[in-house]
Length: 302
Image (cartoon, rainbow, N blue to C red):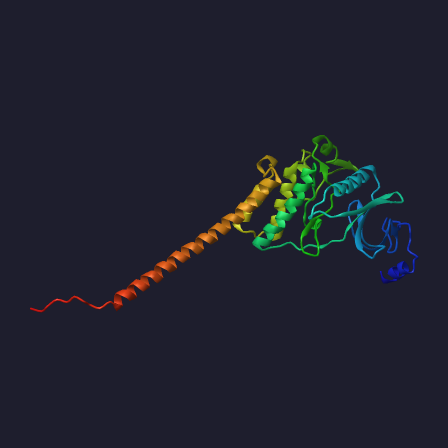
């Protein structure tokens, strides 16, 4: 990697991708130069790149060039261009390198899942906010999972990878869901996070994203979740989509009520403790006063 980086500095970077579609360091993509490969997905690669002003960015470029992959890639760039949200990546540029479309976004960091009660709640609020923004624009993410969540320098989580996002329209979703590739029935999503309906050919609505976010609770606690979280997890991930929380708002309300119930219980415990302490102190003070009082009355002897 160091030798290739020196080639880039010398201005001799390749303008064409390697045989497997990967770009060498120094390859020019729009106004950016590739620095290193960050990861390879099912139909696109993500690179760290540098702009003319030295700004580090992420460049996502398509390597699977069939019509369906192209359509999904273009849709993802359109979604990012429409939605401005603090928990969704900022789209900086979009174009084509040869016959391969690419997009440039802000460069993000890996995100560690939280495990404490308050941090899990805050983390989920932010992911739910991103998913809700997507729903308001008429799309379902369909692939919310830990590996699709990165973070900014301030630690706030960012939901990424909208390549599988689909319109709310049932007709479009059905055409973009299960498909046949090389004789195999291929489903959209990730087992363990995606809702069962995404693997059965049924229409997947908002409740599919609710299922994925519910599965994130299990991932945060690695299965050892408190009872209050388990109730939410089970209600969010039930296999019957009609029995699930139907919207992100319903799931967020359940998380908020869990927090309020816990806060109320702590407050009640503090109040009760205060009452007990007050009664003990009052009783002790009353007893002390009685002990200090002079005995004014006595019985005369016969």
